[in-house]
Amino acid sequence: MRRDPRLVRLSEEHHHGLVFALRLERELPGADGQALAGLYADLVRFWARGLLPHFHAETECLLARLLRHTSPEDGRVTRLQRDHLAMEALVARMRDAGGDGERREALAAFGETLRAHIRWEERDLFEALQETLTPSELDAAGREIEERLPKTTRAPWAEV
Image (cartoon, rainbow, N blue to C red; front, side, top):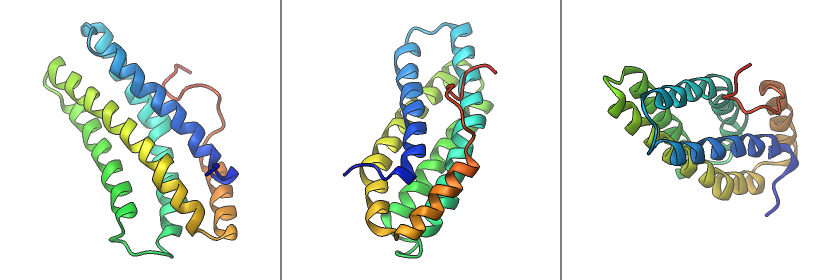
């Protein structure tokens, strides 16, 4: 199914997430302490500038509307919440890491979790939303998403 234009903004941001996950997969294995610190710093910027606003938009603009059509125990609802919380926990683990090894492991897990989460959202959640939400709900969600997410062509982890 083609992506509804009102959800395209989130899909564009998913592209940045997949690029970052691929970067972690490629760079982490050979990263020395300095490179590891750089990856972690980029993750912190990505978290603050990209993922947190994105997660809030998904929850407040999409999940809140999906709950009109399903129960809080619906697997799509619980998966979205569980995945977002798992990534928040990995960021906290990185902040609290006692050494490079623990931070490296958390960064690797974060990349894997992010990639799986994005693929699930694109293949399953967004398809279900497009089939379930009414046109007026999708219109309202699209407007709110555009209002909440900053317009930028730069990757959210790039220096300002």
